[in-house]
Image (cartoon, rainbow over all chains, first blue to last red; front, side):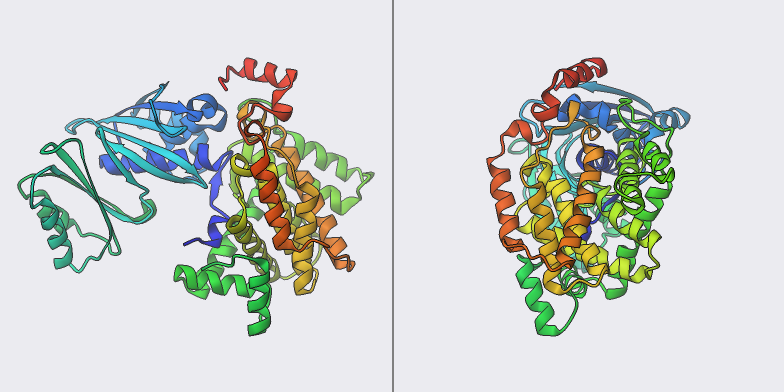
Length: 222
Length: 291
């Protein structure tokens, strides 16, 4: 698959598709995964993001994404001020994240009444990204398709429940990948779907034993 | 599957009796399951963003590093005095290339074409032509398809990223795309589009990616001028009936071979070329960059 609009496009705020547009996307997907705008965010920049991030506005772009902006938002250069206005505290630090892709950011998010969430993601160029870690569990997804993310206890039957709930709603699974920290520990299912998953299905799944959290991301942050 | 060669796209044009831009549009609609209206609307959006981008330039704005920003304004003032070496049209092309390059460095809105660093080449050629000659907007949007199709074939056979193949892959590809696009606008024959692209690519073959401090500023902004002027020269040669002795697909393959042989210090790392000069070292130190 490839589109001519990957060649002409995206429309974006400069200066770099990987270090600016991709960084906005990382912030944006982090916010979506967290579910609300964080009240406090700690952002770690690794590799090339740490080395040349300032000059590319990577720091401003990540904060802009956390504020819900898209890569073509003209307010990106002013994201620090906007974060202050909206009461989002943030810290940005350079950190060597061993073995990570050169364009990696790790974001720790907090908000009142929410459990802390940590995500790690990297930018692959052209404004495209991949999420590589969710709360310490290695994952691998882009958010370019509709994506259902299920956090569960690693025990038999959970995958079957998810696929049954989706098939009941006529939602077709395009791809499905499962990850876990250790046998019998915590697991993450990443399910890319052709259709949008309804709130109802999400609630049904969340009420099941052994399923801790269900998040749905609409394709490309729509 | 999208075209793997310019020759393959030509074959479709000849078989179905359609123009190059249409062959590109139809293939992309098919590949991505989008309607003709949707495709056209999106391409028109890209075109509008280029028009808006040039109009949004502000000569007093500087990049965060302070290295670039005012070049578009300086060139425009010089062009308006009416005494340039290159003539009025070319001076306006140069102005617009600088404006878009500066916009990109100043965190303003641009269209990656094919990349953010090379965002000035295509609008400099197409938007300036549109503003100087009375051409229907539809023709310019068709030209955008020509550019996109050429870019996609370069991506399929070689690459478009400076980190992969040096600046020849970014400004070079942008120049090849713009050459074919403007050749189309001027009524060039099918084969002349590929010839224009091939000549533009050959002229910039071997161009290294050597950004000072790793920033998309020096020499990137000014290289957009080089890419735009080169595109027009290549298109004019093709329209004059000069053919590229090496066919366009083989030229793209040659560019890949050159890129593969290029040392990593010359592929966007900021370690070689003009990035490896005493003044560049001072810039890195002054800005506190850690390359």
